[in-house]
Length: 266
Image (cartoon, rainbow, N blue to C red; front, side, top):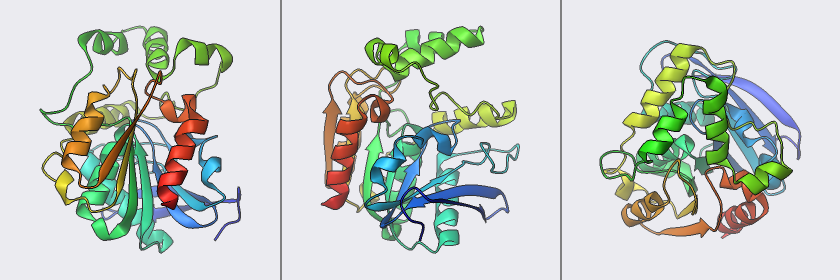
């Protein structure tokens, strides 16, 4: 097992043969960290180190991102979850804690619901159950993200991720704005995968104790979704972070990291 801050990189194979790049760092109980839509493992740069003392953190590049394969075929959050299991199998990890944010939280729902024996504790951040019961972002947010000017759309996304005061003190670069090297087909298929997510019916199958975190000023994934998830997942608790937006895990790194660490140690 790697020592703290020492990382090992490897490649697993999905059931269909797609290469799945993954990275392991730190020592202790395994903790899977799952990134947001159209992002690779760099989503967790500068955050995963907070867990190194007690955990061996495991990240991966979703298919379509990073060093993983990029087949031009249908992607789904359920399929991404099976890719997570393939990575755990490749690492010889029978059971782990799982922490997913944004689309990663959607993927984590499937991992915990379909493979309850593989998940000890579950953390879901800034995410939603998907489907018709989810609380969707408003039309103004959708229009801002769909602007034809890439710079304007990127600026809109940045403001949805972080509060202006935080951005003023942290000019970047910000590794949560998408994998810049993704081919267009993969970016589109990630969007479809996230939009089609609907885990409502399987959420009651989750047996792992669950912590749900959300910024109370998150307009990208409205915070009402946190209570919806808690209403469906047994033994789930919710913590809202006052004044935080979608990337609460960076914006409120100290507070959020402590909440997760305490929960996982429980």
